[in-house]
Image 1 (cartoon, rainbow over the protein chains, first blue to last red):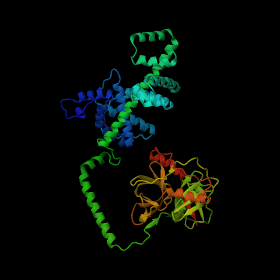
Image 2: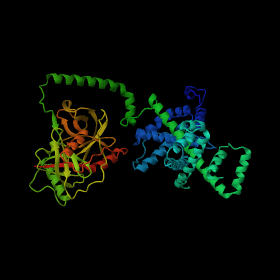
Image 3: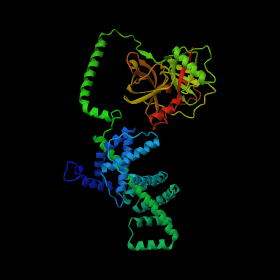
Image 4: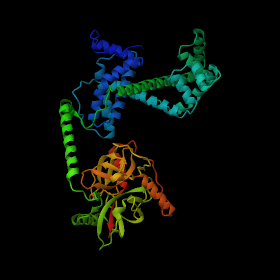
Length: 201
Length: 366
């Protein structure tokens, strides 16, 4: 962290657009707030205009844009990650596809009214994303049925990345080892719920 | 190794926290013991999914925060739906001109209304016009014809005339309806009709002239009680500017109208009512005023005679009061109100589709 937002600014002409994009993507891959903040600020209104002109609401615009960013994030996690177009083009293409799918699903589909913004093919990325979304759903359902305090304990460790020492203090265990024992007990319970939901693809 | 130790070891192994010796032992047990290997595969799969689950949750939380920050700092702004495409261009180009024109118009309007208020003769006290509908001869003919075609049995006995029409809506799925009391003035009988044209006989259970509310009960074997109502009846107050919509029968067909809450009191400071800006016509009286969450917040009852679009609605809380009074007099057998809306998240078209089944035209027989 420790970036200043200006660092990404267009005013800084010594950084070309593609260099800037690759810096931003590095930040995105690490889930860094400043980089994502910048990408968000630069691209949201384009997607918002698209969604709202095509029967969507503000909330739809937010959801679709965030999902598109998630697709880009997931892509940035792959080993051979390379973006062959601008971030803007990519996000627009993904958002457009997601929204068209949703419209078809809701049967509100009309031919899209849009600006002439260039798009790229993103089908493969979206497929991977949908697979991950399904996997996410399985784990989410299992976690949802896990109950407390197991759910909070596992989330503290895996989602919020707290240390076992912090967790034992927060949940009131006498020491980190006891917290760890509890964590593995919770994992064993989760395992049952997880495999009850799990369907191999 | 039991399962519990095994998952601990697997996690240690996957996180690369094992020493090379421990690693060798761990891999050896997997090779020599297929059951242990099977466990490893399961644990690895689950831990792996847990890590990706956690990762997505973190990214989502981050995106959510960023959206919030950008919205607060004004870097992203909501786009008005009305201002689209070409309009948006025109707006950005001419907004100054429009602003100046609008303020001139505003000042002029204020001046003129001020002058009229000073010089005009005092208006008669009854500036409020009730929204019940005189059914004209023509409409009566057409509705009679249609009813003859549609209905096998007609609920209105021959020789009796339908004189006034209004709107009513279910407050209990068992067949209790609420409408405006003034719709029922001088009634000797009541028939209600749903949006598909079916008629049902109803009785007036209770009327409160002061609040201008009345409760009807459908007493007809053809009526099939519903399981639950899509909307709730709100007990809470509304904020000014909240968007609302209504469904009613200003003609022989259900009509949708939309507007907003413009003041928290009704005509001449009446605190039982709200003032709305919505298009309403005779026949809308007794119709529900519904907010976007699908909660009934009022019952339409009147409009200002000399101003277009100024309409008044009785606050929905009065329905609760009315029902309590009825209970005191043992009149509300099994009548229960619900504040929970079941159509909160739906879009408007689907909300209306669900609601219209519960909106009835009131036909008053004299």
